[in-house]
Image (tube, rainbow, N blue to C red; front, side, top):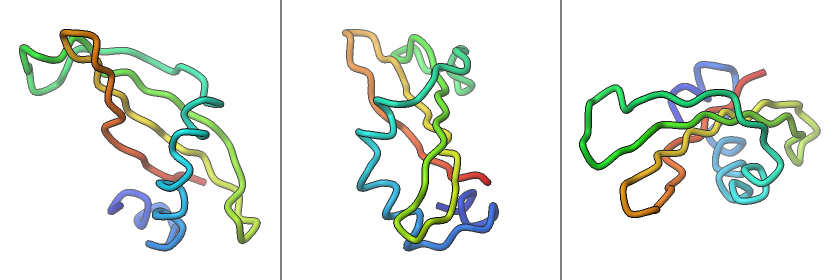
Length: 84
């Protein structure tokens, strides 16, 4: 939430976005893939996705979504950051 707040969004806007994370992820576009920066042996890659959307209050935002791909096929959404 800290990065979202640093980017001019409120806690309420960040938490609203979290409740919509599934839909935001479905409509997002793949941006990049990289190895885990911490070198975790369980993580195959860290993928980044972006999507533009409007919050309920009409404010425009970009959701930066990070997904960690783990060995064994589990892909977990790891973080959400809001940007203008």
